[in-house]
Image (cartoon, rainbow, N blue to C red; front, side, top):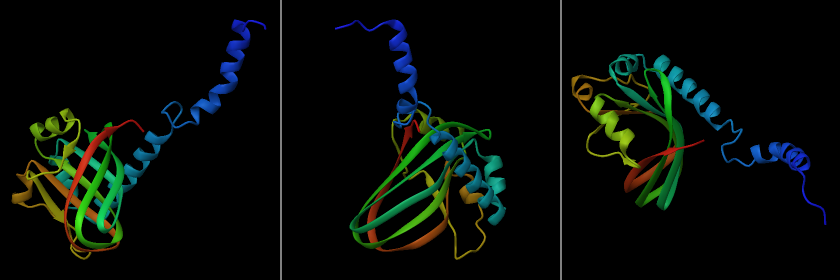
Length: 186
């Protein structure tokens, strides 16, 4: 039995490195680039279709952009999406959104949403948490049948404003639900 030399070890490691990069462990992954590209596209769509959201973005201290959240359910439901936290127009972290629900429901849908953090404190609490759950301090603004989304003085004073848009599919029913945001490494 021969000993493994440094040269054969190095050559073996170099040959195996493309295989290791393909494992999805973050080494050589393009996940961050894909998420950033989707975030850019989502923001372009949002600002083009709903111009009033540009003012909201300008007043915010940060934005969590979730380009696509897919959810479905039959009595028990769930959903998942990935996105990026941008501060000053720069991505600082990546997050997943996990949604759970229970109740009288059936169907599936996809949507995009952006959380606008309107205060430094709200952004800091979000970033410090290991898993932030959307709660009572979030003001929701929904797309009203293609109408114009707008933030007024009520939403502008809320610590976090959530804009939900681009819904596709059908999910009907009455349910209790919650969404949890968790920092990820794509």
